[in-house]
Amino acid sequence: MKRNPRPQNVEIVGHPLGTVNKVCRTEATLTRAASYYGRIVPSRLVPCVIKATGSLVNQLTRSRVFSVPSVEGSVMSLPKPGGNRDLRLDLFRGLALWLIFLDHIPSNIVNWLTIRNYGFSDATEIFVFISGYTAAFVYGRAMREQGTLVAGARILKRAWQVYVAHIFLFAIYTAEISYVAHSFENPLYHEEMGIFDFLQQPDITLAQAMLLKFKPANMDVLPLYIVLLAGFPPLLWLLLRAPAVALGASVLLYVLTLYFGWNIPAYPNGTWVFNPFAWQMLFVFGAWCALGGAKQLSAVILSPITAAVAVGYLAFALFIVLTWYMPPLNALVPQWLEDWMYPIDKTNLDVLRFLHFLSLAVLTVRLVPSDWPLLQSRWLFPAVVCGQHSLEIFCLGVFLSFAAHFAMVEINQGVGMQIAMSLLGIAIMVATAALISWYKGIEGRSPRSRPGPPGATLVGGGV
Image (cartoon, rainbow, N blue to C red; front, side, top):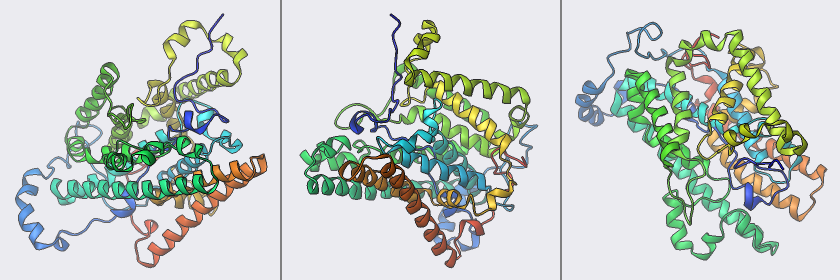
């Protein structure tokens, strides 16, 4: 009889949260780097002490290659300051945050609307790609204007900010789970959310959490982003001078990781859910696209042949996913294809997942131009404003997803309750993002008020 394999890390609605939902379904992208560092600080405003001590290093490390053409030549150029912010980045990052929130609620009929049920990739890929894209054009411009030392310091500062947010979220999240488990006399929450070891050995586990080795369920994405940012300064330096070498080195690391099984150990056992040695390739690819790589590929991206291949691959992925939920369809899949394809590994960013994301990206670029009027409309404002404050909204989404889960378990698990909790959670996320945007607006720090590089679009130019 033909076996019916099920790929790794596929989350099926209705399974216990502890068995499948520990794989955080985010994503992808998480960053407010463009919001924090959208403006270049003039050198005369840099404190004199820093300027005096860093001037020699900056002169030695400052890029000298920006005047070389980026498309015809072999050196990547940076977009110049000015132009309008590409709201597509905010839109899809905001949508990814909503999808992550919905995917984190188990036994929820609404999360059948998320992309993970219709293909190989999910919101995590969107998040990581946009994070790399945004980090590159923000800090790349800083590296050109202020030098490698200052830009590297700003990247590490951002990594530290995300680390602090992660630790703060860890404290609030574990307190929320412990309070609910105690109040409702349901210790299963401890195991479902992966904090049982923390309650047994809080001293050891807390230290492991600060080392990013212990992570409760749904908290695997921020550690990945922290590690990627921490290693970004030298990578960005290389991307600005030899982009092909940087991208090739990233692909080589990915291949070696798959071959040798490299990963970072987790506590109390196992390895990281999102292997940074593998997921770095998507992050680097996003950075490469932001610095001109997408512009070089624009002819391929906009080709009808590419679009046809993308549609065909998405149809293939949809059919394979349907076999997971409709076993009779599995008889149509050849045994050799099953043996080659499975498991579709999320931990190590399976090639099938990467290709699925690329197919979605190709069609998105074609269907959603940067000057699409709806990007400025009130209809897309909720998603756009969430994307502009992604770090805060991601942390809030993790908190709200567990709140929705325990409300459904303890009060009502009906379809009406599932829909209500999903819509209420998204509404709270939008209201919080709007409040943050309003507050920053009165302080003159609104993301919409900052100009973005004209070339910082999803295809690196005016598409």
